[in-house]
Length: 152
Image 1 (cartoon, rainbow, N blue to C red):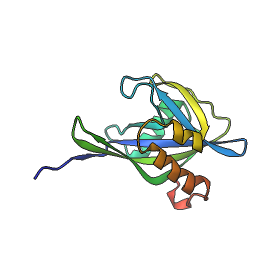
Image 2: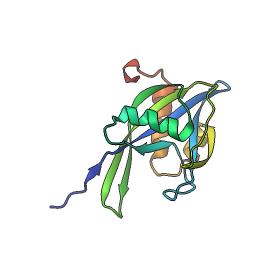
Image 3: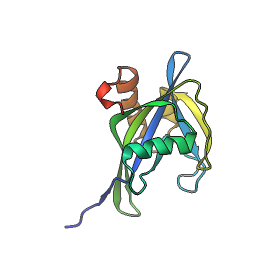
């Protein structure tokens, strides 16, 4: 019997900022050859010796320059099947509430960004399944107060 391997070597992060009394999602436009010109939230690999939490703080800072935020574990996961390489990739999704004054400074992995209301963000994300993750984040972190035990 053959199996499909599961790889869990990365993280994802959804950053939220309150703008005009409404939470907006930060979406980034990829500049790299992988998924070029797709709109997505933050994602990246866990480096040797890092925990997922260390990786998410590092990736947020590297990709956006944002360091002032309150971070939660969302209990959601990005899931992607790679037909070319025959594996399932699963990454834990974190939610960060960003202080309003924090500017976004992109690195060379992205060439544009937008803060979008949830409905527009769900229509803009490029990867299948991202809109369901955003819906869960809206339901559990915006429409309800996030559970304190999920805070990192």
